[in-house]
Image 1 (spheres, rainbow, N blue to C red):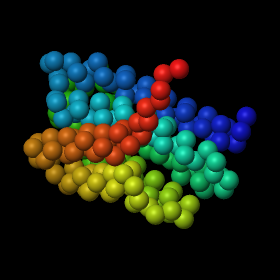
Image 2: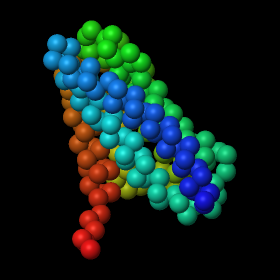
Image 3: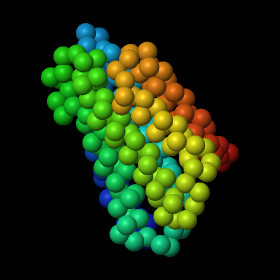
Image 4: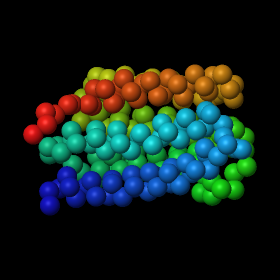
Length: 186
């Protein structure tokens, strides 16, 4: 086992917990009698986060400077994501009777965690001596921080609709399209 494989075991365990927590809330979040479209859209968006994080960690496989600080910074991301999705779907989603009320009650925790989620990769790139906002993912981190500050500050429903739509488009353009590399069939 390589050192990178060893490190990614811990990362994958925490990512799996975040995915499980989110998936556990999907049925309840999409229940017709409690559905709030902004919340449901965030549930879908947050299901894409572990995929993009897992995919992006591959670029660090050749990194020779793994130490406790770099490992902690990389592991902090899935930990914060887990805490964020717990605020989004709750530990007992079946007990939430109104997802709209739940979302706005939790919005500061949710968007505060989103700010941290987007500061961590910037900090990690700084630690490596790289440009912290270079490329599509660096620009996306800055966009996510900006809309997270707005989401933290307002409870305006139209603003939150705009924010979740912007988040989905930013993930598509900043992570999914640049990360997609077609391979020829054998």
